[in-house]
Length: 195
Image 1 (cartoon, rainbow, N blue to C red):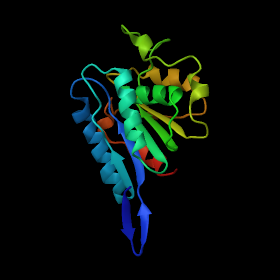
Image 2 (cartoon, helix red, strand yellow; image 1 turned 90 degrees about the vertical axis):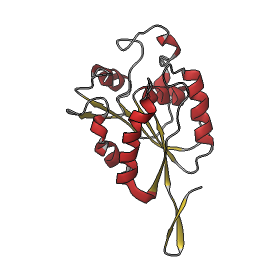
Image 3 (cartoon, one colour; image 1 turned 30 degrees about the horizontal axis):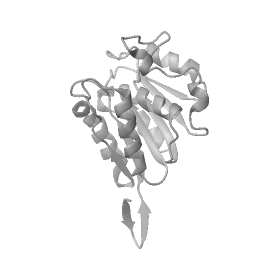
Image 4 (cartoon, rainbow, N blue to C red; image 1 turned 135 degrees about the vertical axis):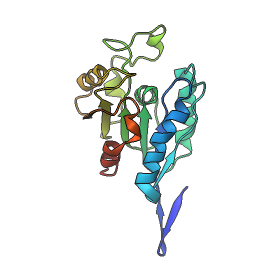
């Protein structure tokens, strides 16, 4: 458990679990997003950033095991952030698994939508959300989705597919920051610090 000393009292840091995107070099690339969060959020937050297995050819089953392992060691209400594939895998995880850890908020950045009018690559059925996924998500947990209109990896239209299924989610459209948001997550910081 992480604590910071403030005068004579001990304050527990807010815990953030950041799940990276997929593809060769994704962990290294997304590290800039994590460093942005750490520098802006400061000592009141602790950002956990595990290396996910086999990022070159990610398999949901292996990532599910790793997400479970990470959640079991975190204390307090955990803030979940997922970028790209990490965002879609987090949503799948939360809609199919019973997390024993309390979730304070879910923040998905440039997440691809699998199936429907979204991506349909070979084997996508294994990672697509179930039809009833919305009813299986944690209740009363803030959910925010972020996407840049000029995303060069995940089409902006994927944000609208999520928005249709998740009417209670906060939808944040950003301009001119691409798939990596030019390593500036100011909108995410504003939302998560308001929890």
